[in-house]
Length: 104
Image (cartoon, rainbow, N blue to C red; front, side):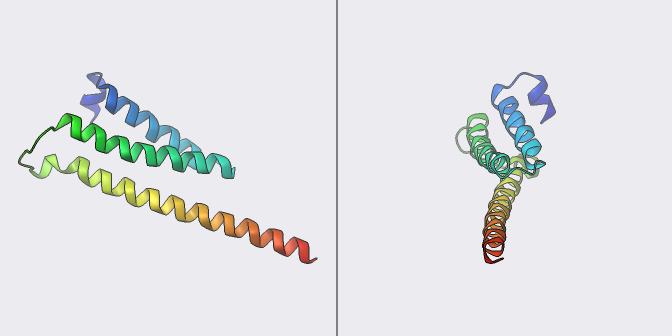
């Protein structure tokens, strides 16, 4: 992966930047920044598919070292689902706090 970045592959550099920015946004406590991080993470997941298709066009025989990007893609998809579930829980938690404060 680092060889592709160092060789100047634009798609891989964009992918790395998207993942880095989304990771920084996930460390914030602001809901809008978390949502923006989830959106960037989802864009990075789709962009990884685009990058893989451009780098390996057509049908090729996949070996263990060739399926590493695919495994990474599945991990990113799982992570995107987890982030969306966490955002949903944060929304529910805010609604519960709002209802609780209105009852007092």
